[in-house]
Amino acid sequence: MKSFLFTITLAFCVACLPAPVRPAPEGWTPGQSDLGDLLSGAGGARRIDQHGRALAAEDLRDKVVVVSFVAEDCSVVCILRARDLDAVARGLRGGAVFLALAMGDARDAGRLRAFAEGVVGAASPLRFLANDPEGTARLAALLRYPAAALPEPPPQILLFDRRGQVAMTYGGDPVDGPRLGRDIALLRTFEGGLDARRDAAASPGP
Image (cartoon, rainbow, N blue to C red; front, side, top):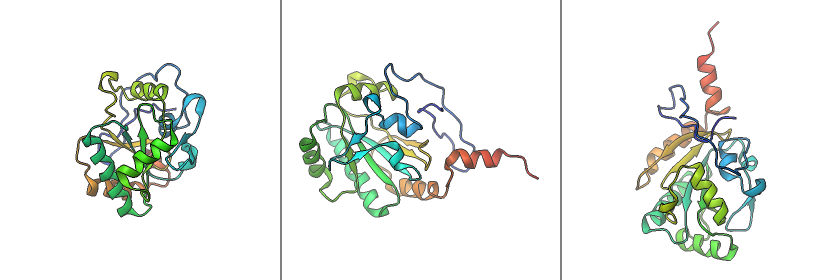
């Protein structure tokens, strides 16, 4: 299985190039895809969102997925990032699944829901996923994010193709909504994921 840290460094129309492989943190439960690695809880447990619904990578198969990171005690920059992503998600009307993975101790369902609704409202398509301190440590190690920077969550936004592989990473603020929307629309046309498109481009002609 390819490393979670596989990223696209060229435009979508160019062959994908893998980043150097970095070992997963000790105790990490590998998933069936990059997205599976990211969402896998302790022992492979499913994540729970602010509405109490369980979610795992297999539930998202054949969907384009956007993942960001939040924390209940994060800075205003983190809050604005979540609101920007909420605006993009509302504008796309189901074009992709948007997830905000909590960092820190976010096991209390009531607190997580209150936090999510305070940031983006009760009707937001952005799903906030619970976490615990152990899971946060795993994520920080997986993303090579310095523990000293916590509780401020990683600023990255990750875009996954329809097979759960990392297609693009975005950094910096504010969120470039138009670009993200265009990338999602293009990625939705890759029914077999980017690997299938790359493999087809590499196949010799007749």
